[in-house]
Image (cartoon, rainbow, N blue to C red; front, side, top):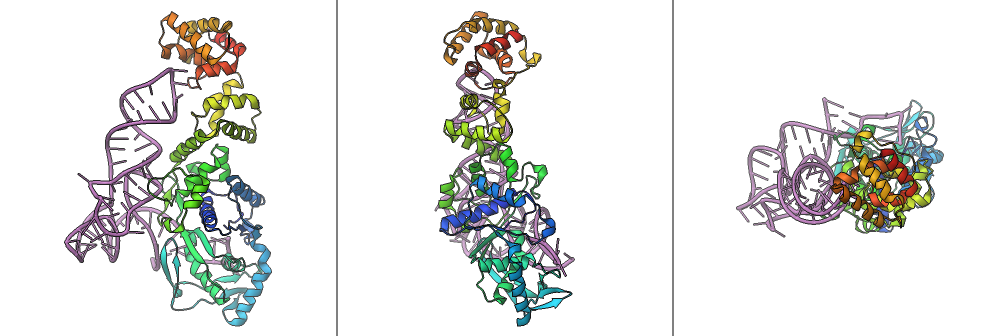
Length: 411
RNA sequence: GCCCCCAUCGACUAGCGGUCCAGGUCACGGCCCUUUCAAGGCCGCAGCACGGGUUCGAAUCCCGUUGGGGGCACCA
C-alpha cells in the first residue's frame, strides 16, 4: 500500500489496502507500507502519522518498516543516469526522460482485468527525474517495487495507464515485472466519486461516527469481492481465509451507508456485553465525554440492541448522565400518571426493574390506562424523550431520587 | 479531442451455455411480537440496459448502440 501523505486516509484507499492485506495474509506473504512523498509541495505534516494510526485502528498491520519514497532519491537518480548511459533515457531541459518504444505493445495479465495491451506509440517519453533532481512517482514507484522485491502490485484502477510505463522502466533496468491487479474504484451514492458531501470518507470520520473497525473491514471487503452469493458477515479471520484476488470484480461499486449502518448494528449486537461496554467507553473517551464508567457499563446492555453506531449512545442514554427537559407537548396530559407513578415508587422495595414494572402496571390498572398510554408520559418525564431504553431498567439505573424528582416535575 | 475500462433488483452481489420463468444481503412495503425505539419472525415489491448475431439452447460467448467511469503532468 503506497499512499501519498496529502491528508487523511480515504475509505477507498482503505479498501485497496484491505485487498492487499487480505491477499498477503492469505498467501502468507508480506504487506508493505510505503509513503509516496516525492511531491513535497503537497505533503501534509501530520498525514504520515494519521495514516499509520488509521491502519492500526483497523488492524491492518504491515510488515517491516514504513519506507519513504524520498529516502531513495539518490538511488533513483543513479539509476536514471545509468539509463541515460545505456541509451534508455535522455536529458531534456534539465530533466531526465525515459525513451519509450515507438512501436509494438506493452502488455500484462492483470489479475482482475485480464489481458491489457497498450500501443507503445500512445505512451510519451515520461520524466524520470525532474530538473530539480527529485524523481517522479512513475519512476520511483516501480524502482521501489524492484528494490523491495514486490511480487504483487494491487492498486486502484486509476493506475492502469501508468502500468505500461512502469513495466518499460522495470524491463529497462533488467528486473522482473511484478504481477498487477487493478481494482475498480468506489463511488458515492450518486455514482460519482466518493466525496465529503456523501458523508464520512476518511477513516477518522467513520471512527468518530461510531463504526467498529471489524464492520468497516467486512463491509469494504464486500465492495467488489464476494466469496459466494450467500455469505455476508465474515470475521477478519474468515476474510483472510476466503479471500482471493481472482474473485475481485472488475466493475466499480457504490458505497451504501445504510447497509454499513445495518452491518455495524450486527457487529454491535454480536459483541459480548462487557466488550460492548468497553468499546463504548473507549469511544466516549475519544470524543471527550467524561461520563462515569460504572454507569456506562451498566447502561450499555440497555442500548446494545437498539443502536447501530456508538455515536448514538449519548442520545439514548444521556438522561442517565445529565438533567433532562421534557417537551410539555410530549407529556400529553400525562401529569396524573406521573403523579401516581411517583407515589407508587416513593417507597418501593426493592427498587429493581422487576418490582418497578409490577408497581407501574398496577398504577395503570388503577387508572384504567393501556400500557401504551400510561408508560409513554412516564418515559418522557423520566428520560426526557419519547424514545428510550426499556423503561423499568432505565428507572432502576437512574435511581429512586432522580426518578421521583423528574416525575414530580412532570406532575 | 485521443486512448482504455465497466454494465444482473434502488444498492452490494451469486451466476463463469442447459440445474435461473435468476439466488442471498441492505433498503423499501405489509403483518406478527411489543411500554417507546430497536431487535426478532413471516410475507412481499423489485433486476439480466438495448439491438443484432453464434448455438439445439444465452444473464452467461461475439459485434454494435446507449449509459457510466478512468486516463492522457517536471501530481501521486
